Structures are given as C-alpha cells and as structure tokens.
Image (cartoon, rainbow, N blue to C red; front, side, top):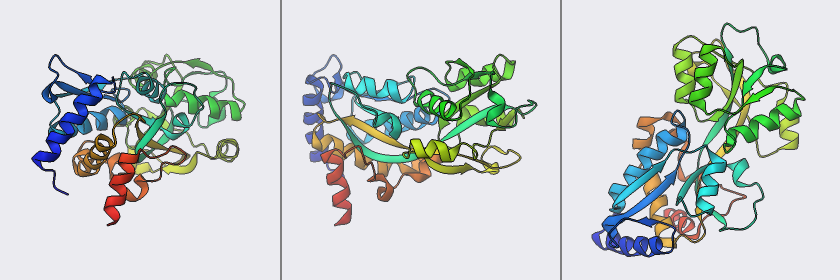
Length: 311
C-alpha cells in the first residue's frame, strides 16, 4: 500500500501525541519534525546494532520523523528495561529474555519475529580446547550483565555442570581479549554472520565448539531453544558445528498507538532488501514467520498490518 501525504500527516500527529506521553521523545519543537524515535539495539560489533541503525534511518525517511536515536546497549535485557522504563520506543530482544517474568511497568508487545540468533562458543584456533568440557576451570567471557548472551551462556554452563571463571564482556571486548590471550574462550548469541566473529575468522584465530552433546539436556529444560547448525561457510571454518538457536523479536510497549505500530511493522518489511545489504541475517525477515511471536502477543497495530497482507 502506498504511503500518502495524508498518512504521513496522520502519523505526525500520532507520534507527537506519543511523545507527550513519554513513549517517544520530542526535540525542542513540539511539531513532528522535532520528534525522535529511540531504538535500543546492542553491541556495536553485533547484528542488532547493524540492522537497527539501518532500520531506524529507513523509518526516519519513510515516516518523516525529525530524527532517530540508535542506542548502543548491553543487549536484550538492557533493551527491554529501556522500553519498559520509557527510555526507548523499540527494542531488539531474544525470545528467551522477552518471556522471562518481570513485574510492573508496561507490558511488551511484538511487531515481528525477525531472525534467529545462534549461540557461538569461540576459542582460539591454536587452543587445546576442542569441546565444551574443555572450558572447565577456564577464563570465559559470557556477555554483559544486561545481555541475552549471559542468560543463555549461564544456562548452558549450568546444565553442562561446568564451573568457569566468568568474565562480563560484550562481543567487541571478548574478541579483543581472545586475541591477546586474557580469556580462553567466549560465548556470543547473535545472528549469522556476526561482525566480531567474522573478524576473528578472517585473522585465522577462530575455532567454534560443537555443542551437540549438551543440546538435548538444554532443550529438555528450556524448550524455547532450537537445535541448529553454523555452516563451515559462514565463517570459513574447518567444519560445521551444532548449536542452539533462539528467535529474535522486535518489541514495543503496549501503550504505542496502533497506527504507529502498524507503520513501523510495514516499514520493517519494506526495508528488507536494505537490511540484507548490511547483514545477511535479514534474509530471514518475512511476514510468514514474522507473525509467529508466541508467547509474546502481537501489538494490535502489527496484527492489523499482517491481516491486511492476507486480503
């Protein structure tokens, strides 16, 4: 459906109204050109940040926004806290974090399921560590305290009954520490390919650990995770590895007006090719899987967009 000048004017009024209720912030102007959409993404070396920056600019141009604020964050936990605390309007989050019980605040609603994250357990290619059990007693980065990575890493380590010296670090810092030998390995949950992982592979420093032995136990306790594989061609490694995958959602607060949520959802799918150009994880963005956000309910505005596609 083509977006008319009338649609843009209507969105302008809605977004300004939303700004006054703290779901969007407004600049010094109270008119639409002063309205800024805040998007909580993630680590600068991760897929959330890469796709979030491009998507925010598409929304800015297509919806006539006065500006966008792309927030580099700790990850999923941080992102949802920002949406629930009204310091961000849109958040990227893994499904496991999005479905964790949390009290108070606005309830979360989904615009779309976008793509899956894959658990990477990385060690140096010249390391003697060849499997997950080899991390016992080692110094391991597990993500920042407010990330989705740390949630998944600690679940896997607990189920595997592995004690490690855990270090909080985002992807960029973990990769640098692996380079200089201050850690023995790290966990990272992200789309394929993740820039920080690709850089290690390009330098010939990457070995990914296969998690096949522990996956049945993890999935028995946490059925939200799926079994998946990272192909050898993804990072030009010697072999494919079996790992866990988890869906990613694009989330907002339930207070967002329906018309705004609908147009943000439409803009996501219209931006697909531009998103693919910056990261191939966006190839998975499609309306058919996009509607599958259970157990997080779709925002009524997003649902209206999907229903429109069926007519």
